[in-house]
Amino acid sequence: MEFETQAQQACYEKVAPWVTDLFGGSVLRKPDKPILGVMHGSAFAQVGVFPWGDNDAIITTRAYVVTGAELTAELMRFLLEENAGMRFGAFGVDDEGDIIFEHSIVGSTCDQKELESSVIHVARTADDYDDQIVARWGGERALDQIR
Image (tube, rainbow, N blue to C red; front, side, top):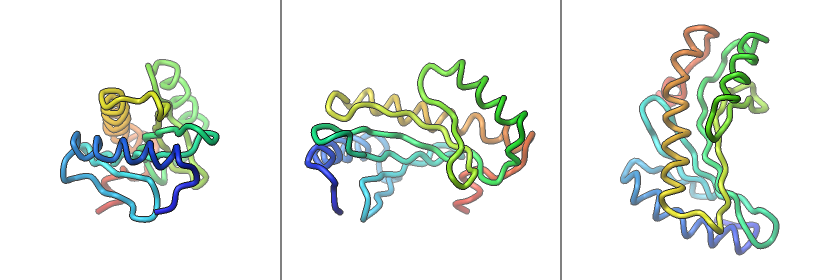
């Protein structure tokens, strides 16, 4: 695996064992990228470590909530209104029109408890919202995509 900076590598080497300790044998590692995956209910959360300048890294936990939903104005308004009430993390739409939920934390100051909170919150949020979105706007949950 190649890293863009030493800070990114150091952060990944710090958090990868934490993710394994916290989530056990269900953790999936991408062999070529600093990304780890964790299943929670019907959600799949990915923990990625990305460079932030030369001397730090960002840890982003992202879950794909729904793929293939009809991205209507009503759905977009729903997601924005839900974002306004979130304590941390936010819904978004990626380049392919998939609905995601993600949260980022600073790598150099992150501890295991903060990482655990981020991953669990992102996965639970995706798990809580996926059925609701599919029922109203169609599409498939992340779990449906994996099957």
